[in-house]
Image (tube, rainbow, N blue to C red; front, side, top):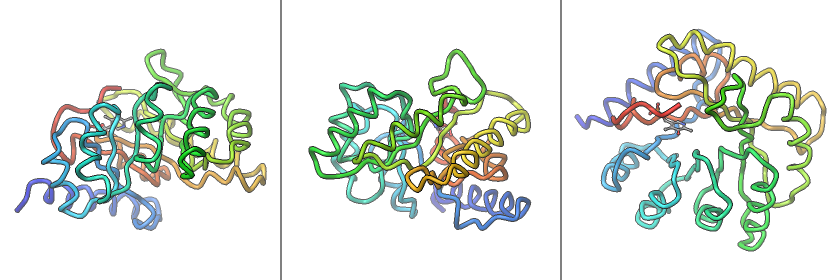
Length: 232
Ligand SMILES: *Cc1c(COP(=O)(O)O)cnc(C)c1O
């Protein structure tokens, strides 16, 4: 059997078990196959086994893959996004998971308007306050979300975080729990533009814990396609 298919079956089983432990419906959990480590042929195989969400973190590497395979899936931009790369991303990527500053929000909005195609965004939150990580501080998120919600061509899809690197994923459970707490706090404001239905959290090492804590998108690279585990 195809190796990617085998890996996917294992991932789906693990997600199902995590959902069982948490009393969740596995249909709520979307797997994003992160293909940043692999070439266009492997990305094609990922789509061939039935995965439909593709994650890439660098525009210059993603665009050639998108040119070949773009119509076959929904594309997620998950890496740091520089403003001068926004043109390459909007119109190709349905989702941007790395919205972390207002200047970027405005640029994404303007480009989306120019193409007549809204961009769905996740606000990236640096829950653990790591120096090396991007993202807003948790206490900045509500004000930022209110401002971003004023931009008509952005659709706020949810919150995203990257947990610290640990050998034992149990250690990062509080990070995921805090992101969900923040989502609930924002929803309680009762503003329909701040519904933020999704939580993008969980990578190869920690996705089962993230699913137990409410992830609706997990971003999986090495566990699905091989390659080194993601930089944290
Ligand atoms: C690389 C990357 C991933 C996937 O990492 P793995 O550990 O290989 O699953 C997920 N999210 C982001 C933001 C990444 O950059």
